[in-house]
Image 1 (cartoon, rainbow, N blue to C red):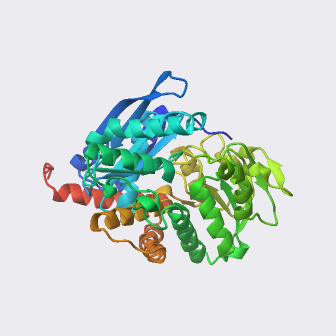
Image 2: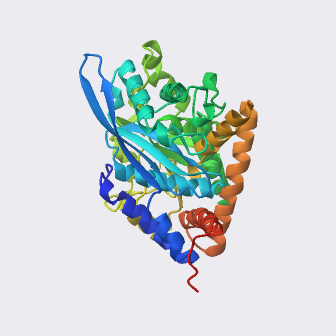
Image 3: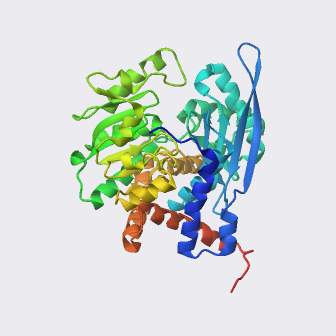
Length: 432
């Protein structure tokens, strides 16, 4: 049940969902046409001097999708599968999700095609700084504000923020979010995506009159968002029965302790001052070991998808036995699989709502940087809960009221807001 790497169709897949929403909302033809393509797409070459003296050049991208509602906002990922199609699609999803939770942003995304775990710490820093030099002309607190994504943690973002300051010849903390707290990053940002996902799961569980202690959860992925979701869900009382990463999966019907697993998993990373953890969840003891993709077919109440795109697709969707899916990653369920799950009555809590905790707290970081304020972690967590619960409840209520899926409700909420903004700015031809 491995990932389908058909990036050539990823953007077409996303636009097919957009078409459906535009039809349902009877969106103005001019608005629809504008939303079918990104506002700006930049491809760059990032040159890195390696430790052995050789030079390597890595392709990179930065895409800004519709920026009607505000500056572009979105992460930067370092991954060997990154390409322009993927980055474009991710920037589109960012535009939608920012509108879904009522943030004053458009969509942005960046990436470099590289396996960062094969680079030394110094090579990785040169890559991070080189990427910022390549895209700096289209960045800025009022234009495009990057953030962390796959394989770009606070350490990497700190290097990027420092490089942008050097280029600007001044301190510009609001130009990048997800920074270390010592560089004016926000408290609560590291756990925000996982925390927000838990709030959405709680909303669904409340609607279904389901208690956490009676709900089993399997989680695909054990990166930053997945770990904090697992940790917080475990504390809330949900029974985490399975976890996976790129190297394998583990299961225990008695439940797993995410903190204990992470402690063992990152021990070597701390001892050797590594940027990335190279251990696997499979180091856990007294558990059943599974093939990585077997986790997707487990009989559980909730399958949380926190890895990469297209994990559930037409070829494996019928093997899914979970009673609900939670999309913590971007685009983990293809549109074909989504339709099939809908036919089977399996609800999918969509990424454009579920994983917005990170961008919401990035927004709070941006606000703090612009004003020079410093909010406590308690304040951040309270504001995050208030915003994602308010907008999430609107999505769930709309789905029930209009008898549509959660994804359709979320997309309608987001596209409706973007479309209204485009129309209010003018330059749309009156077709009546």
